[in-house]
Image: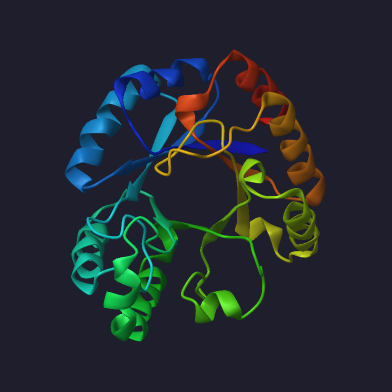
Length: 243
């Protein structure tokens, strides 16, 4: 499998974990601007030349991208993203860190959805989306603005450490049945806490189980959340699956 990593907090300490990696990989870096991303990209190249950096834009008010984001934030971000040749990750999640946006932007939901859809369609060659696996293949995700009918790589966020076992079983069944698996990657984790600060940590043992499942299910691309949690135990397991 081809294994990549997210890094939501590209600090010096977290980026130094790149020294543990000895294979070609992608690092998906979250920043608030393209200028900031380019600075961090140069730093990563000095640490590990085998790395390809992917820009993960963070919006000012909603953090993630969805029809509940501020229209002005979407337009500003997409205008910037159109100019870059860097690969891009679009994280399709609702603004749970700023819940007032649900009410504020409900009236703009359809308009924002059209804006997102148009951007993804016009820039599909350089985009990966991160999105929830729940109801994979159904129309409800598209109605909710969490999936779009565009030919891009979609990374399904199956963070087994954060999901009750009963739901995990259902999601695994859905993932097995998913068609055209070459168009998808699976996001695994979490091996370090994210912006919510309360994410349960996936043990090395359970990461191995998840990688085994993903491989047997027929997926050949994985993105692990996140680089900052990487250590010798995790990398020993990852090296066994990386091709």
